[in-house]
Length: 444
Image (tube, rainbow, N blue to C red; front, side, top):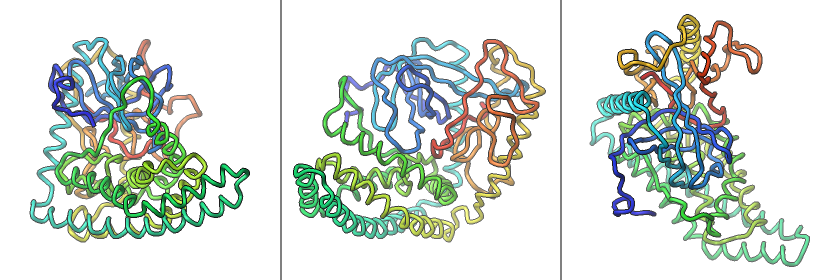
C-alpha cells in the first residue's frame, strides 16, 4: 500500500470529504455509476458503484467526465459536470486531476462538502455513548467471527469435493493435474486462508469502529497489471454476478444493517467496506485463496463453491446482526417498506415541483439549498446515507429512475409533467439498479 504520508503522495491542496452520487463517462468505460468521496481544487476521488464486481477498465491518463445532480430552491433539478484526467486507480475507486474547475462548480462542490460535514455531525450526535458502542462492536465482531468460521469450514469442504469432481471430468491430463494440485494447495493452506480472510474483515470492522469508514485500499501502479492483479480481476469478474444476485436477494437486510452501522459508527458506511456486506465478504474470501495461484479452471470451481456456500449462510448472519443491533436500541423501528413508500411520495412531489420550475442559468449562491433530510415518515429515527437525506441504495428521486411502483413514461421519455432539460443542459443519468447501496445526489 502506498504511504499516504510520503512526499510524493502529498497533495498541493487539502482534501474535503464529500459524499455525493455521480456518473463518470469515458471512452474505455462508457457511462458508469460512481460516488464522489472527496475533492480539492486540483482534483477529486471517486468510488465505483458497479455492484461489487470487477472495476471498469479505467487507466491512468484516461480523460473522463463526471456528472452529478444538484437541487435548487426555485428551479428544481439540474446537472453539473467536471472533466479531468485519471491520475491513479485502485480496486474500488480512482482519482482525477481537474482540467479546469470553474467558479460555479467550485462553489457547488464546497456546498456539498459542507452538507456532508453537517450530515456526519448529526450522525455523531445520535451515535450511542462510547462505552455502549464499544460493547456492541465487540459483540458484532464475535458474531461475524462465528458465522465466518462456519462459512469457511463449509466452503473448504465444498471446494474439496467440487475440485475432485471436476478433476474426474477433466478433458486433459494437464487440466486434471491442475485440479489435484489445487486440492493439495488448499489442504496445505487451510489455516492461512482462514487467517487472511479474518484479517481483512477485522480491518474493515475496526475502520468502521474508529469512524474511518474505509477499509484496505491498494493503488494499481504502472501501465499494466501484475499476475496477481490479473488473477484478482478475473476472480472478481466471475464473482460479480453472484454478488449482484445476493445483494438483490438480501437488499432489505443489507439496507437495515448499513443504516444501523451508520448510526453506531457516527459516519457513512461504504457498502464496499461494510464487513457484513455481500461484496466485502465474498471478495475477502476470494482474496484468501489468491496467493495459492490456483489457475483458471480450479478458480472457477472455487467461485461455484463460494456461491453454493454463501447463499444460504448470509441470511442467518444478517438476521442475527440486525436483531443484535435493534435489540440494543440502534434504530429498533427501522422499516424498509415504509422507507420505500416515503421515497415514492418524495419522488412524485419533486417531479411535480420540477415541472413548474423553468430552466435557468448556473445557480447563484443564494439559490443553493444547503441540505435535505429524509421525510420523518420514512423511518423513525433512522439515518440517511447522503447529504441529500436519501437512504442507502436509492438514486436521487428527482434525477434517477422512479422507485418501484411509481408509474413513468415509455423508455427514453420523460415522466409526465417532468421538466425537460434546457438547451445545452444534460439530463442527470440514472443510477444503475445493480450498483448497490450508495448515497444519492442530494440537495445542496
